[in-house]
Amino acid sequence: MKTAVLYARYSSDKQREASIDDQLRVCHEFCAREGIEVLKAYTDYALSGKTDQRPEFRRMVANAPESDLVVVYMFDRFSRDRYDSIVYKRQLADCGVLVVSATEPVDRTPEGQLQEGMLEVIAAYYVADLSRKTRRGMEGNALLAKDNGYKIFGYDTDPATRRYIVNDAEAAIVREVFSRHIGGASIYGIAQDLASRGWTTVTGAPVDYNWVLRVLKRRAYTGLYSWGGIEVEDGMPMIVDMETFEAAQKVPKRKPRDGEGFALYRLTGKLFCGACGEPMHGSGGTGKSGKRYYYYVCKERGECRRRVRREFVEDAVADAVLDLTADEERMRKVARRMVELREASRDE
Image (cartoon, rainbow, N blue to C red; front, top):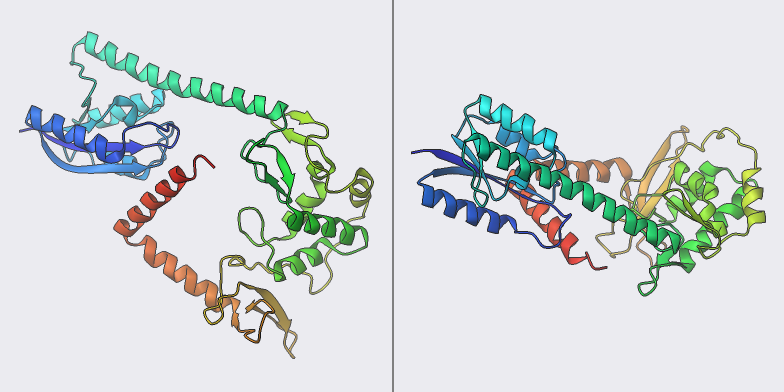
């Protein structure tokens, strides 16, 4: 009896595609009809077939020849890249392993190999065509100054028009950055202060020197919309006028003074006090010996004001993450949950 491993992949580039469970079900039914014994299944979640950077795919290839066959739902589940498909099928073939499709039967005749090659060409064409159509749609959005999925601090997106609108709280911070920099405050000093107040970037990371520098250089705040080489004057709501923007560009650069080295608080925006539930932000101080100490402290509300050493809590979180990632089954659950959340928010 021949043996097989199954390979299934779910990519997020198609809204309507067979789920992992459906792919595996069809593959199991195919093997049952053909009298093939299934040894195991390899599955990659939310990973594109345009690349070979898929952990389970690479593990399956590395484990050959543990079976006679690799069974996939369709050949494009194996790979959508023509070069990768040829290379990895040849690598498996050298180990005596054949890749077969449960829904696209081809024989081992020259005609069958031609048919399989055409299916691979069609899969590669689909990817290239989808990329072209996506680019065309995004260019159309850009010409109308619409959000192309690029979040900019200081702005939200109007759900009806898909155009940028001002986020008042963040816009106030943008104006503060420009005002303080023009007034003589260093980029390091501004970044330290904002981070200590709990401000984060659009990705949730604590603001730092480079973030403040990007804010000062971003023409979008003067009303210029820009995406992929397309620029639309007055395509963005203005947050700072051109006079203020140009004044900020003329401020001479200077080296940071002693004590202005920027401290990174990686958990800003993610850490909450276990006693009062308030967010915790970075704070530092200098001891009698002149040594700097760094802490996470509660925001100044009520009488809690608890603080914890930055190194202690960050090391504890790092240890917890390492413990989680060491368990493959738990990581699979995390990956599945991430895919579910992504699919649930697709329409937003």
